[in-house]
Each structure stands twice: as C-alpha cells, then as structure tokens.
Image 1 (cartoon, rainbow, N blue to C red):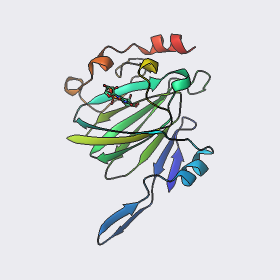
Image 2: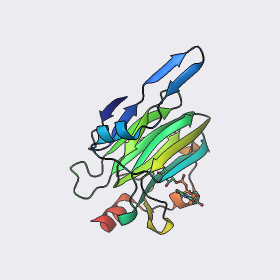
Image 3: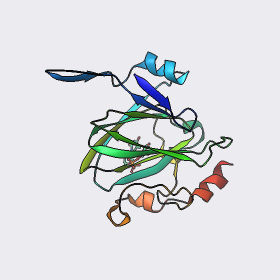
Length: 184
Ligand SMILES: Cc1cn([C@H]2C[C@H](O)[C@@H](COP(=O)(O)OP(=O)(O)O[C@H]3O[C@@H](C)C(=O)[C@@H](O)[C@H]3O)O2)c(=O)[nH]c1=O
C-alpha cells in the first residue's frame, strides 16, 4: 500500500496495491494492521456507510462535535468524486486549510480524514457510489457543518454552481465564522 500524508497532519491519501490478472483485479480495501502502521494509531471503526449520488451533488461540509467526533476512511465504488477535508482542529497550524483529492473507482484511492475535520465531496461523474468507515457512531444531535460554498474556505468543487445539488440541510448550513466561534 502506498501512502502520502497531506499538508494537513494526520490526513492521509492511501493507494492500495492492486493485483490484476486475466480474471480482473484484487486489492485489500481495508487492512487494520497496515492502516495502524501508517497512522501510528489504530482507529476502531464501528460504522460503514454508503451513498449514491448523481453528477453535481455536493454533500458536506459535515462533522460531529465533541465526544461524537468521527474519523473517516473514505473511498469510491463507482464513478469519481472530489473529496474534501477541512482542518478545524482548534490549535492546528493548518486550521481552516483544506485538501481536495479525486477519488474514483478507477484510481481506488482512499482518504483517511481524522477526527476534528469537516468532510464533504462533489460528484464529478454521472453517478457515484461512495463508501466510508467511521470510528464513532452517527449522532444526529452532534451533527455540525459549514456551507460548502463558504467564501472563506473558497473550495473549488469542480462543479458549475448552477449544476450543484445540495440537501436542504446543507443549503441552510452556517458559515465558517459561526463554526469557528462555536469551536474556540
Ligand atoms: C450520516 C448518517 C445519516 N443517516 C440518515 C439521516 C438522514 O435521514 C439520512 C441522510 O443523511 P444526510 O443528509 O446527513 O447524509 P449525507 O449528506 O450523505 O451525510 C454524510 O455526508 C458526508 C459528506 C459525510 O462526511 C458523512 O459523515 C455524512 O455527514 O440518513 C443515518 O441514519 N446515519 C448516518 O450515519
């Protein structure tokens, strides 16, 4: 497995070794020991999620607060997405910075998003099936987020604004300053 730490400490791009032969391919989509070696700690994943979305969908930016914070190991089973992680760890030197990585069924890349990050993705292909592991359970009351088009974050989702499809919750999400004031 190849891996690269992004400019945001603890946030890693993983590239599993893919074995191809006349039947197709094989790869380890998750290996606890290898991941623990890369991260230097062993996240205990307790929930797997899967969603399907059409072109232009932007899901995010989401997080769960406090004791309900979640680290996520994310990948794409069908299509391609631009996956975005924003560092909102209060004392982090890269606070407010983000990384954006194209994840696809084709490139089989994964992103490990630590606790204390906002996370979201946009769908670049006609459809995309997105899959992720979480190290803490879903808790509706602990959900928090920031509008994906927040001007301070200035994320290029690589989708024309008039084609973006957002949930009602995401359309109504607070701005980055409001989250900052809550977390500080
Ligand atoms: C996230 C989640 C949602 N749900 C329910 C609540 C709601 O009725 C329905 C759809 O939820 P949402 O609109 O929040 O789904 P979605 O916008 O896909 O939310 C997800 O976005 C990505 C970017 C993330 O990082 C995830 O952690 C999660 O926040 O599914 C669960 O039952 N369990 C869960 O873990």
